[in-house]
Length: 378
Image 1 (cartoon, rainbow, N blue to C red):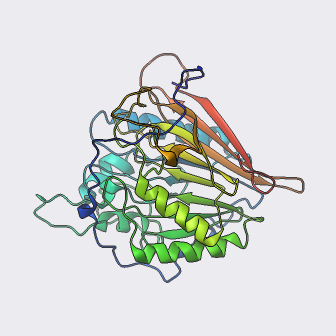
Image 2 (image 1 turned 30 degrees about the vertical axis):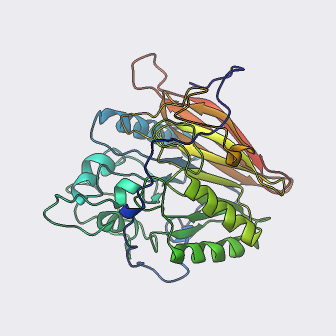
């Protein structure tokens, strides 16, 4: 639950015993679109609202244990779409933060783990790949290529029925590459690919592309929000993964080199909800949101204070504050970006979903945050 107490944890941690398994990095698949890998959202959602954009976001919805949990999360998202239909608060799409299926990204897992739970979701679904989506089972006799099934579902060359699904009516999406930028009327969403290792692995090719994208998006940052999505979490206070030094260094170097800082960074990987604020040396504050409580059965707990296995006294955490967290509920984000004559604003809400019959209300808002996209940072 959220911890509004004086002794609550306020810093991310590193996990001492975690192994940085960079040898698990897989080669990138060929792009399905053309450089620089931009997708105009109007190719998928022609009538998207240009004054207020609302969308859902969560990650780590896959898994085969306790499958009812992912259905609970998906059903609450569908319910919200139905209740808000016809209003300017109605979600236009769902952005998945990775780990669509477990434990490996096999085609046979998409029906039970993703397509069936989200079959009734009435809007398009965009995604970034997680480590489990990209990993390959060494015992799989078919020896599939890394990300082959993910590309079929999310990075196809046209919207069409998913060939390995037995019954789903959902069409494939047309993301142009495993890393890409989703261009919308109110935001540029840069979508990174962290590969398979526990703490992420960003290739030189992707680093060069990311630098170019930051510079390009920085030119319109007063007109559009700049959002970054990457599956692996740069900052986390959990006991399963902890923070990623690799992602921190990659992002900070990229921001400092280009002098372009995003309005917000979203990730999954860690199976809970956390909201951090990182203050960079130039005074710019950037929220880092972990939203990986989308349905995988095992939630990841926040480290206890003063546990020597999870130190939080590293200098890299000096300007990072854990504002809020929830480590015992599943849930999803509802993000809204609104632009009018007087203001340009992003608001996020974390909706928790219970996995028990506690009462008639299955979901409730347990954290809210906001950013004035031009005049300040959170």
